Structure formats: C-alpha cells, structure tokens
Amino acid sequence: MLIGYFSVIGFYLFRGKTEGYLNFSTQGNTLYQMTILLTTSNFPDIMLPALYDNQVYFFFFFIYLVLGLYFLLNVLLATIFSGYKNKLAERAIETAKQRLFYLDNYFDKCDTAKKGHLNLSEARKFFQIILNLDYKK
Image (cartoon, rainbow, N blue to C red):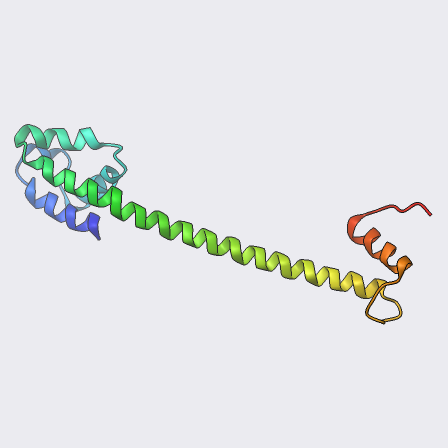
C-alpha cells in the first residue's frame, strides 16, 4: 500500500518534469520504479534527476525510504520469520509424533508376551532394531 501511495504521488509530482519523462512516465512504470527503489538498487538513478530539478524533492524520497526500509520491510521480515518459526515448530512436532509411533511399533514387536515391559533379551532386540546395534553373545 505504501508503494502504491507513493507511486501515485510521485507520478503526479514529477509529471512534466525531467524525472517524470525518465522514470515516472506511466502509472505502471512508476510503480515498478518505486518498488525497485525500495531495495535501494536504483536509488541514485531515480533520485538525482529529481534533485537537479528541485532540491525539495529529496524529502519525498527520504520519507519514502525511511517508511519503506525501517517500517514496511521490518514488518515483512517479521511476518516471514514468524511463518518460518511456525513451520519449524510444526515439523518438530510431526517428527516427534513419528518417532513415538515407530518406537511404539518396535516396542510392541519386541514385547512378545504383551506384558508392557521388556526383559533383557527383548530389550537387546529392541535396541538392536532402533539403534542398529550388534550385541556379542
């Protein structure tokens, strides 16, 4: 939304000036240039022609970059990080559930008498299966 507002302001602010002909010729081009300007990739190319016309235009670009870089991109980064953290937590929970499922299955395979605990030979078999251990007898 910030980019859209500043694109409209920039389009009308620089219409009929050098900057308007170079970078803000259409609404679509203005939106594109302002989006790239937020990455500061084309900052001098966009701002310098406007500054040659009038030094006051510096404040337009300064306010746009301060709002965009320090507020908009921080919120965007926080949102992405929060989503990543949630996915990571979901994956950890799913991994723990799978681990418990497989441990229960292996335990049930080794508990032949179905008594709820393993004796020494069953425990050796259980650990041999889950840890790939090779016990010497």
